[in-house]
Image 1: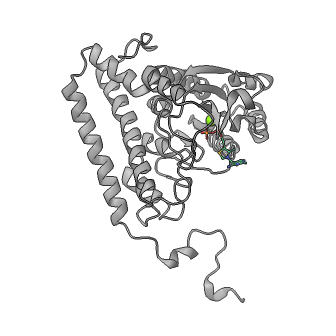
Image 2 (image 1 turned 180 degrees about the vertical axis):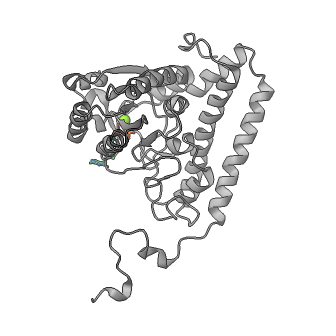
Length: 338
Ligand SMILES: Cc1ncc(C[n+]2csc(CCOP(=O)(O)OP(=O)(O)O)c2C)c(N)n1
Ligand SMILES: [Mg+2]
């Protein structure tokens, strides 16, 4: 059993803990299955797995309310599952099938759900940050009290457009939470080699944006920090920065040989800090769940994930006609010479 501090939120119910365990494990097993399908050649292009980072998005979604929005980078499958998108539709999109969220035309990095207020899925590093500020601007303009979670990485935090967004968000007091998922690497570059100051959460200071560092391997700490940030935004006090310290166990993408760090480093995080083991320990040691209860949860997750892979394999590839739908200009093939 990993040694851990007492949970940051003391009044946590057994049901809540079980929900976090379930939601994190669903992401992990789904991603493992995606990794397998990639290895079998069923997923083409890029595939960036989120394994190890599950507590970040599950903790923040536990604090979110109906109508709140989220936008993120290409490492996005966990965010989609955590906000309630259907695993079948996500897996079918990963495999480029008609039943996918973007009808098989977007793939891993380009999925959206208006219903769940999930605004992508963005392959250009940092591109989602001004979009997140824009979504928050819309809510402020409409006069509601919804909040936008804008997720980006430690590498993206060195991009200029992040600071243009900080400036406008602070100036207009936009209800946006900038969530920096600091997994300590940007592709093969460690934070130490790329980032002038290790405390990224302080980068909002010149704009008057409060920020804090959070243990991203502890879902309860993430949830508590999320609640504080949300309260700040809903009260009309403007943006908030959460730098969530986390770690990805897999390579940057499926094609990364990961020569820039040692196996021991990864293994140490897995055995000492794993976010799912953490909640498992709390459940078992607190007498909230037996090993059999946890096995039941594992079993139900396995069946959801297997079903999503079956759904994906059975769904056809999009037809050629789909080349002419969902595009900006309404140009049909016969109009080309017009
Ligand atoms: C503008 C731009 N520059 C470079 C790339 C190539 N690239 C893809 S991911 C990445 C690293 C980003 O790291 P980080 O923001 O820490 O996110 P993580 O992958 O760790 O989740 C880079 C440089 C890109 N997609 N877009
Ligand atoms: Mg990173």
